[in-house]
Length: 230
Figure 1: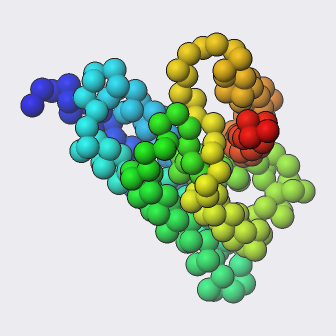
Figure 2 (figure 1 turned 60 degrees about the vertical axis):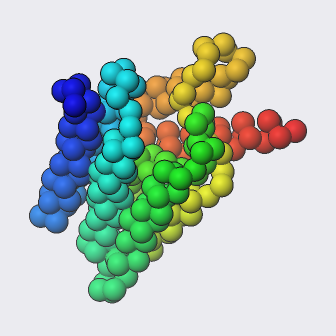
Figure 3 (figure 1 turned 120 degrees about the vertical axis):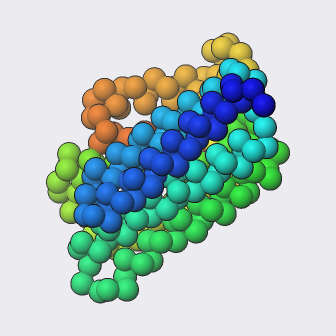
């Protein structure tokens, strides 16, 4: 087996390692620091797919390994973040455990994705990295807007977020994927709109803007579907 065939899988394993380290940090009480590892994993997840396509070494092993790594980095780790945040502000011991629905539905989402042949040029349901990025930057959002932040970090709101994201993960909503078959503006209006809006939000608010970017992503996808179905 050629060395180049191991390169994407090695990057995938770094994604997995990043997720594991993030979990350890969250368990040690460093929630924001642990959340950073979701961002690192998201970058590595992009790189491993790009490397596999560039080197033309895509295969079933890489596909399965990618899902296993994503389950830890974008399933278990965001679940632990929500759990830790809810536990910090909850007076009921059992309440934070309800946030752990997110890792369960992340596993279901990843299993469905591996079997679904419809997701070649768009996603069906919210991808696990998008849901994880939403969770990873919630505290940044809460710090940026303290008045809203007190609501966001309440246990019941965090549980609502976990349940909402879980439903969106396995939903049948077609969502924009940044997979360009051509760069013609007319065929990619919503893709370009998403990229432009995301850049503006990120420049304006930094990491605190990522939850807004994810919401914009879902909103633009819904509008695109509504227009396309007319």
